[in-house]
Image 1 (tube, helix red, strand yellow):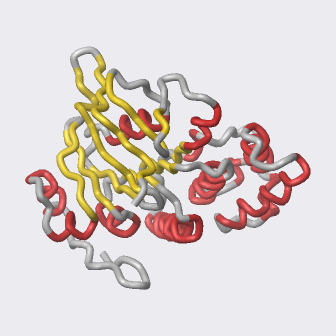
Image 2 (cartoon, rainbow, N blue to C red):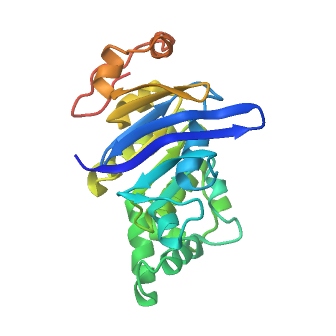
Amino acid sequence: MELALQVKNVSVHYGGFTALDDISLDLQQHKVLGLVGESGSGKSTLARVIAGLITPDGGEITLNSQPLLKKRSRAQRKQIQMIFQNPDASLNPKHSVRQILSEALLFHRIVDRAQVEKRCKELLAKVHIEESGLDRFPHEFSGGQRQRIAIARALSVEPSLLIADEPTSALDVSVQRSVLELFGKLKEELNLTMLFISHDLGVIHEISDTVAVMRQGRLVELNPKDRFFANPESEYSLELLSAVPRMPKPSTPGGLTT
């Protein structure tokens, strides 16, 4: 299987504090890597390094066999898109949904101006929002709907890698389920390559192909999902799994039962 992303010996230091300590991992094309760990383990820092939002102190990142330099080109920035825990981080409150999607399409030259309207409607349809929402503003939508718009914004530029950093944790439980189901559907429809960060092992079990576990800035385990949940190799992974009130059961064609 061809590799989409390679992270080699990446480190980040803040004064005397080590946020990332010599991290190395691979992500295959069209697969989802679930990244777990307690708060402060370095998950979000790693995501931001990969996205180019934080410059590492050492190490290399390669996307589709091309090294990502510290100062990334427009094309490289386009290739990696990030969905944040709070959708307001990526949605300009002063812009309508039409403006938010159109600007991304035109800036990265995804379609010509004559095709923008059609593409905007297609993007909203993918995330199950009516096309009438194009002329509304972010504050007019619920939190779950805003997250769907943020997903549409990320997908609009046709990235090679999608990073989702706790995208459901700020939502109500019922809304979490619908947004997670949307991610699952998009994964299948678009053959997404995704780094999915969550503290919820049920979510990780449902969406991921491979699981990476971080603790105190270090990678302590990287294994296929089934192996991780059945027989974790690190003591810390076992502690995480033991803390789950009811263990995830093997997935069925209808989805995950937790």
